[in-house]
Amino acid sequence: MSVKALLFGSIGVIAETSDIQRRAYNQALAEAGLDWQWDEAHYRDLLNAPGGRARLRSLAKQTDTSLTDDDINTIHARKTEFACSEIVSRGVGLRPGVAALIQSALMRDIAVALVTTTYRENIDAIATAAGSELPLDRFAGVFTVTDADKPKPAPDIYAVALSGLQVGPDAAIALEDSAASVAAAKAAGVYTIAVPGEFTRGQDFSAADRVLESVRGFDLPQ
Image 1: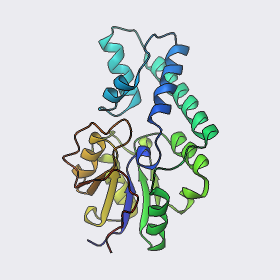
Image 2 (image 1 turned 90 degrees about the vertical axis):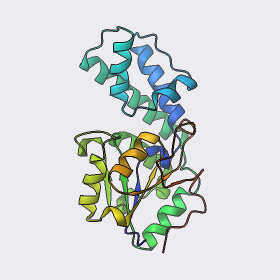
Image 3 (image 1 turned 30 degrees about the horizontal axis):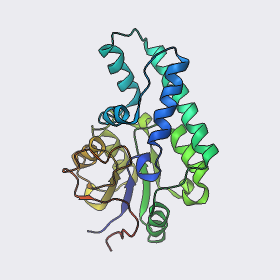
Protein backbone atom coordinates (compact mmCIF):
# COMPACT_ATOMS: atom_id res chain seq x y z
CA MET A 1 0.00 0.00 0.00
CA SER A 2 1.45 3.36 -1.07
CA VAL A 3 0.24 5.88 1.50
CA LYS A 4 -0.28 9.42 0.27
CA ALA A 5 -2.52 10.73 3.05
CA LEU A 6 -2.80 10.24 6.81
CA LEU A 7 -6.24 11.25 8.00
CA PHE A 8 -6.88 11.98 11.66
CA GLY A 9 -10.59 11.44 11.74
CA SER A 10 -11.49 12.73 15.20
CA ILE A 11 -10.05 15.10 17.75
CA GLY A 12 -10.27 12.18 20.17
CA VAL A 13 -7.54 10.41 18.20
CA ILE A 14 -5.27 13.39 18.75
CA ALA A 15 -6.02 14.34 22.36
CA GLU A 16 -8.02 12.82 25.19
CA THR A 17 -10.70 15.42 25.94
CA SER A 18 -13.86 13.35 26.50
CA ASP A 19 -14.09 13.97 30.23
CA ILE A 20 -13.44 17.67 29.69
CA GLN A 21 -16.30 17.72 27.18
CA ARG A 22 -18.55 15.82 29.61
CA ARG A 23 -17.95 18.28 32.43
CA ALA A 24 -18.36 21.21 30.04
CA TYR A 25 -21.77 19.88 29.02
CA ASN A 26 -22.73 19.63 32.68
CA GLN A 27 -21.72 23.25 33.22
CA ALA A 28 -23.69 24.41 30.21
CA LEU A 29 -26.75 22.36 31.16
CA ALA A 30 -26.72 23.68 34.72
CA GLU A 31 -26.36 27.24 33.43
CA ALA A 32 -29.43 26.64 31.23
CA GLY A 33 -31.42 25.48 34.26
CA LEU A 34 -31.56 21.81 33.20
CA ASP A 35 -31.01 19.00 35.71
CA TRP A 36 -29.29 16.66 33.23
CA GLN A 37 -25.97 15.88 34.85
CA TRP A 38 -24.06 13.24 32.94
CA ASP A 39 -21.79 10.87 34.81
CA GLU A 40 -19.03 8.95 33.03
CA ALA A 41 -21.15 5.85 32.33
CA HIS A 42 -23.99 7.87 30.83
CA TYR A 43 -21.63 9.96 28.71
CA ARG A 44 -20.00 6.80 27.33
CA ASP A 45 -23.46 5.68 26.17
CA LEU A 46 -24.13 9.07 24.59
CA LEU A 47 -20.91 8.85 22.58
CA ASN A 48 -22.30 5.89 20.64
CA ALA A 49 -24.15 8.49 18.55
CA PRO A 50 -22.00 11.38 17.27
CA GLY A 51 -23.12 15.00 17.31
CA GLY A 52 -23.64 17.06 20.44
CA ARG A 53 -26.65 18.95 19.11
CA ALA A 54 -28.30 15.72 17.96
CA ARG A 55 -27.79 14.18 21.40
CA LEU A 56 -29.37 17.21 23.07
CA ARG A 57 -32.38 17.04 20.73
CA SER A 58 -32.80 13.32 21.37
CA LEU A 59 -32.62 13.74 25.14
CA ALA A 60 -35.10 16.63 25.05
CA LYS A 61 -37.54 14.39 23.20
CA GLN A 62 -36.97 11.43 25.52
CA THR A 63 -37.51 13.51 28.65
CA ASP A 64 -40.34 15.63 27.20
CA THR A 65 -38.26 18.76 27.75
CA SER A 66 -39.08 21.83 25.70
CA LEU A 67 -35.90 23.01 23.98
CA THR A 68 -35.90 25.19 20.90
CA ASP A 69 -33.16 25.08 18.30
CA ASP A 70 -31.90 28.37 19.76
CA ASP A 71 -31.78 26.78 23.23
CA ILE A 72 -29.79 23.84 21.91
CA ASN A 73 -27.42 26.06 19.96
CA THR A 74 -26.82 28.21 23.05
CA ILE A 75 -26.14 25.21 25.30
CA HIS A 76 -23.79 23.69 22.75
CA ALA A 77 -21.93 26.97 22.22
CA ARG A 78 -21.46 27.42 25.97
CA LYS A 79 -20.24 23.82 26.26
CA THR A 80 -17.66 24.54 23.59
CA GLU A 81 -16.53 27.70 25.41
CA PHE A 82 -16.14 25.86 28.71
CA ALA A 83 -14.33 22.89 27.13
CA CYS A 84 -11.94 24.97 25.01
CA SER A 85 -11.06 27.15 27.99
CA GLU A 86 -10.12 24.12 30.08
CA ILE A 87 -8.19 22.45 27.24
CA VAL A 88 -6.03 25.56 26.87
CA SER A 89 -5.67 26.37 30.58
CA ARG A 90 -4.65 22.79 31.43
CA GLY A 91 -2.31 22.53 28.47
CA VAL A 92 -3.83 19.23 27.38
CA GLY A 93 -1.20 17.21 25.52
CA LEU A 94 -1.47 14.88 22.56
CA ARG A 95 -2.13 11.17 22.94
CA PRO A 96 0.95 8.90 23.00
CA GLY A 97 2.72 8.63 19.66
CA VAL A 98 0.62 11.23 17.84
CA ALA A 99 3.30 13.94 17.59
CA ALA A 100 5.91 11.45 16.33
CA LEU A 101 3.50 10.00 13.77
CA ILE A 102 2.66 13.45 12.42
CA GLN A 103 6.34 14.33 12.08
CA SER A 104 7.12 11.01 10.41
CA ALA A 105 4.36 11.54 7.83
CA LEU A 106 5.41 15.13 7.11
CA MET A 107 9.04 14.12 6.67
CA ARG A 108 7.94 11.58 4.07
CA ASP A 109 5.80 14.15 2.25
CA ILE A 110 2.63 12.30 3.18
CA ALA A 111 -0.35 14.66 3.34
CA VAL A 112 -1.64 14.97 6.90
CA ALA A 113 -5.21 16.15 7.46
CA LEU A 114 -7.93 16.38 10.05
CA VAL A 115 -11.22 14.92 8.87
CA THR A 116 -13.65 15.57 11.68
CA THR A 117 -17.24 16.65 12.12
CA THR A 118 -16.46 18.67 15.21
CA TYR A 119 -16.10 22.46 15.24
CA ARG A 120 -12.97 24.45 14.48
CA GLU A 121 -12.94 25.97 17.98
CA ASN A 122 -12.20 22.56 19.52
CA ILE A 123 -9.38 21.93 17.07
CA ASP A 124 -7.82 25.34 17.67
CA ALA A 125 -7.96 24.86 21.44
CA ILE A 126 -6.08 21.55 21.19
CA ALA A 127 -3.55 23.10 18.81
CA THR A 128 -2.99 26.00 21.21
CA ALA A 129 -2.44 23.59 24.10
CA ALA A 130 -0.17 21.27 22.10
CA GLY A 131 1.95 24.01 20.52
CA SER A 132 4.54 22.84 17.99
CA GLU A 133 3.54 19.18 18.42
CA LEU A 134 0.40 19.88 16.38
CA PRO A 135 1.54 22.07 13.44
CA LEU A 136 -1.79 22.73 11.74
CA ASP A 137 -0.09 25.17 9.39
CA ARG A 138 1.72 22.20 7.85
CA PHE A 139 -1.42 20.09 7.47
CA ALA A 140 -2.71 19.57 3.94
CA GLY A 141 -6.24 20.19 5.16
CA VAL A 142 -8.45 20.71 8.20
CA PHE A 143 -11.96 19.55 7.37
CA THR A 144 -14.72 20.19 9.90
CA VAL A 145 -18.48 19.91 10.38
CA THR A 146 -19.06 22.93 8.14
CA ASP A 147 -17.57 21.08 5.17
CA ALA A 148 -20.03 18.16 5.07
CA ASP A 149 -23.75 17.90 4.39
CA LYS A 150 -24.18 14.98 6.80
CA PRO A 151 -22.17 14.16 9.95
CA LYS A 152 -20.54 10.83 10.64
CA PRO A 153 -21.36 7.93 10.36
CA ALA A 154 -22.16 9.23 6.87
CA PRO A 155 -18.99 9.25 4.74
CA ASP A 156 -19.57 12.80 3.43
CA ILE A 157 -16.67 14.45 5.25
CA TYR A 158 -14.26 11.80 3.95
CA ALA A 159 -15.49 12.30 0.39
CA VAL A 160 -14.89 16.04 0.75
CA ALA A 161 -11.42 15.52 2.24
CA LEU A 162 -10.26 12.99 -0.34
CA SER A 163 -11.46 15.24 -3.13
CA GLY A 164 -9.76 18.27 -1.59
CA LEU A 165 -6.50 16.40 -1.11
CA GLN A 166 -6.77 14.79 -4.56
CA VAL A 167 -6.06 11.40 -3.05
CA GLY A 168 -7.90 8.17 -3.75
CA PRO A 169 -9.33 6.18 -0.81
CA ASP A 170 -6.93 3.32 -1.55
CA ALA A 171 -3.96 5.64 -0.88
CA ALA A 172 -5.14 6.90 2.51
CA ILE A 173 -5.14 5.68 6.09
CA ALA A 174 -7.70 6.95 8.58
CA LEU A 175 -7.36 6.94 12.36
CA GLU A 176 -10.64 6.97 14.29
CA ASP A 177 -11.64 6.63 17.95
CA SER A 178 -15.33 5.66 17.82
CA ALA A 179 -17.35 2.97 16.07
CA ALA A 180 -19.56 5.49 14.25
CA SER A 181 -16.52 7.33 12.93
CA VAL A 182 -14.90 4.08 11.82
CA ALA A 183 -18.10 3.36 9.88
CA ALA A 184 -17.77 6.73 8.10
CA ALA A 185 -14.20 6.09 7.00
CA LYS A 186 -14.92 2.53 5.89
CA ALA A 187 -17.98 3.68 3.92
CA ALA A 188 -15.64 6.03 2.05
CA GLY A 189 -13.39 3.08 1.18
CA VAL A 190 -10.48 4.13 3.41
CA TYR A 191 -8.25 1.69 5.32
CA THR A 192 -9.18 2.48 8.92
CA ILE A 193 -7.33 2.00 12.18
CA ALA A 194 -9.32 2.33 15.38
CA VAL A 195 -7.56 3.95 18.32
CA PRO A 196 -10.25 3.93 21.02
CA GLY A 197 -10.21 6.66 23.61
CA GLU A 198 -10.87 6.55 27.32
CA PHE A 199 -14.64 6.79 26.84
CA THR A 200 -15.01 4.69 23.66
CA ARG A 201 -13.03 1.55 24.48
CA GLY A 202 -16.19 -0.48 25.05
CA GLN A 203 -17.57 0.10 21.57
CA ASP A 204 -17.63 -2.47 18.79
CA PHE A 205 -14.65 -1.88 16.51
CA SER A 206 -15.00 -5.07 14.47
CA ALA A 207 -15.48 -2.99 11.30
CA ALA A 208 -11.99 -1.48 11.61
CA ASP A 209 -9.10 -2.93 9.64
CA ARG A 210 -6.94 -2.76 12.73
CA VAL A 211 -7.33 -1.75 16.38
CA LEU A 212 -4.50 -0.14 18.37
CA GLU A 213 -4.34 0.99 21.99
CA SER A 214 -2.29 3.96 20.82
CA VAL A 215 -0.24 4.98 17.78
CA ARG A 216 2.99 4.88 19.77
CA GLY A 217 5.42 2.80 17.73
CA PHE A 218 3.08 2.60 14.74
CA ASP A 219 4.92 2.92 11.40
CA LEU A 220 3.20 3.96 8.22
CA PRO A 221 3.66 1.48 5.37
CA GLN A 222 6.59 2.30 3.10
